[in-house]
Length: 415
Ligand SMILES: Nc1ncnc2c1ncn2[C@@H]1O[C@H](COP(=O)(O)OP(=O)(O)OP(=O)(O)O)[C@@H](O)[C@H]1O
Image (cartoon, rainbow, N blue to C red; front, side, top):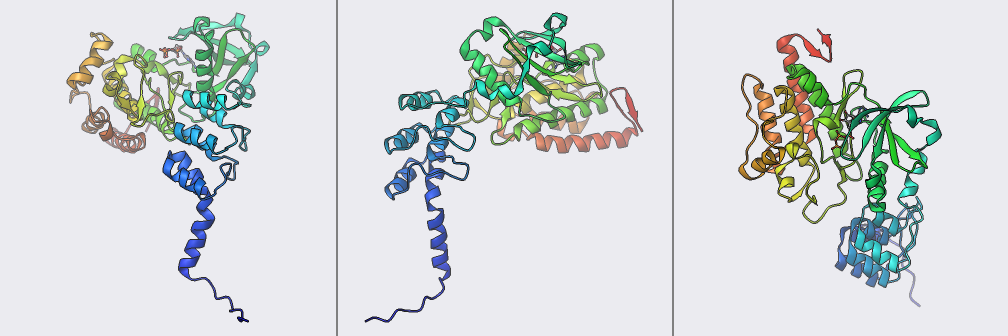
């Protein structure tokens, strides 16, 4: 009879192998989210359960559906993945695919009996506002945009802005869903330089949503009234916008690209600070193709549009940096560059002839000039991030304060 050997402690290599083994099942989740078909097949062939879930109860099918990996979705379903497994938040793979608009995957999941217990519209109720709390008959019209009118109304004793979406637009179920999706994204945002979303009016035939009311109006109104801003004010405003935009670009788990950053979409609060608004056109950066993002064209305002967007190429976050540069240019200049020319013509020349606004040395300090040239660089990869822009602007503002001894901003004078 063979005597039993005393157990010796595992060596380093054995410990490493044990670790790989204990992490091994989760490779299925990793490969599914990355679209690594060979990896997924290998894991399943090794006997990993197709319904394996992580601590949030998210399965390989959730991840593949969410990341738009169609082939993996099909494969997992073939291998017996549960089409209606629910994660910690009650979301099925179909809920995920819908929320990021992966149409083909939604179809496949539905064909396999997939349901969406969460539903797009039901992400809204916690922010629904009873329409009896808002008297729309007392509403005062304050503006009109591409999607409808904007009113100031009273809600629980406070003046707020009510944005109405034209019934011709809101009656289209697909468009309505897209709006609700954008609002669901907006309602999660909280930042001092982002206009606060308040809620959607419940049971209203029209689609109406409330945001905080900024009584000083938009940057467009300010520039029309005041013309060119003094340098410290322009830089302080630029910092406000950059901070709001940086928050959007650093949004987790997916960056938010505004896509329509214009002077009309920047509003001023009573303290004189600027806030970025109108996420109706912003796009969750998760909805990307292999190269970046594709814009369907016609979206956004031509005068502030990045060349790659005008040319309908794939694009990324830096399209907002390009628009930002034009806003800053306008604050120093007092109005838009090439204002006598049609906006589309201006965008065309920027996209195909690399034309950029003139930077007079009398108007633009050297460091602002350099920053603007970097921000509207023709190569999107050469443009700085908003995080970098903030650092530069903070230094420029310090220098301006140092050289003048005075910062004048929003009617305040800081000595
Ligand atoms: N929260 C708000 N507080 C105060 N005024 C607002 C508010 N939201 C919008 N406005 C005013 O209403 C106007 C219209 O706004 P809206 O966002 O509908 O359109 P826009 O930004 O001008 O154009 P577009 O729809 O093409 O983006 C704005 O220019 C602004 O003057």
